[in-house]
Image 1 (cartoon, helix red, strand yellow):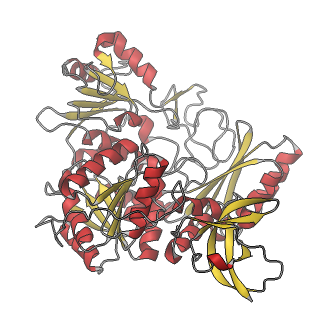
Image 2 (tube, rainbow, N blue to C red; image 1 turned 90 degrees about the vertical axis):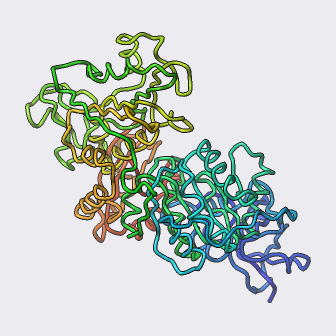
Length: 602
């Protein structure tokens, strides 16, 4: 028998998930352990791989490990378990997940650095979040915490992070975008100089590797980064914080379609850390975890005044009601007003041009997009079910259409970009990243948000408008104006109240009743490159095999050059296991396969 290790090669294929055994040369025997990044022979070449198990094996037919990359493991046992779970949940090869635990360069122990500033065991005083931070430091909390506060307010940093850092526990703070990473890093550094690590996208690979090494080897540090750091190893994990967990940026659109909140939740369970959500509005998924709520010192009113404008008042005014135009004319300071328009890819719903009834699929009840067939199940949509009309118009308005209307009504000199000198800026939600505060924010057509064709539409609508309201500067006259044809909608009622938890609880109850996440599970499957006719029929037959044990398979629906299915059920664990085999088979046939677990849009 000889010393051996099982290595998962860094090859994006399901076939290598179990790994292969290799012998360990004598000069590496004391340096290689679980989590080591190595180089091994595979086929006719050498590839990187990750050690997932050590043991003894017969040396017969075992190839030796070629070399060791770096001197630090990139994961330990609990983090490996998280990676295995993620690979199965998101139906992706294990090697693609393991690669996310490693730094850009070889993982090496960082040189000794200066110690950070001394941190008292508790820095929150009588702040409501102090108890959450102190429970983390003492290791006596397991339930998630939810701090309802604007993330740009520095009030939350000390009470939440201070006790954990003072106890030598590591903290990971994951924010949606690079601009917010810079802002949050500044907030934490001002309170705890020398204790914050920044995983900035502007850093070189060498700098990122250095930050990775410090987090992996030193406790009592706080890492701030975008979703890509969610798999980084931590020494003495104590607290994992996700900022504005409902934001779309926390869910990867490219395979593997991992979600920050799900990964951090799994880490908190397996590593003994505590999950905390920070933001004015948590997601329904966080609410389903049964968190303890902690409010800012301002208590429950978390955003400014809301003014709902009924677009039906006084006839057809085009995109802007006279009241909205009057408010925009009154703004004179640079970037004083922000006009929100739907971004491309928001999947606007359609309504009948005659009776203005929302267009729905007769078969599955889904809200319909453009086109003659349902995007969810492929059923032909036909005419309006209420009046028989054949003309349908989209809900919402694009940026260029909004700019053209404002230019005609107010003049082009008043229009500009966020941060510019013109009084009015027009943009999408992406334009808000890094934006300062406004006097006035306008939602041109809230109906496009409220009636978007996916099950998260109402939660998403409230989240977007809460974020807009969070960018309003304090003071009288500051307000968010929401134009809508549904002024009594329950989302707008919650927005007026200035508190979201009651609405989210109702939304959770509705999803539990309907079997939608977080009660049930969804998985979207797309296949491109299939020849029409028999090849497409064959794929449909193979997909239908997933429809077992309470699993429903909707589709296929044609889109572009491919087919799309939606798999729905209370538990998709077995269906995902079968989908791994099916996806591997399809890819070997030359198809391009994309699998989206927990899809945001249906």
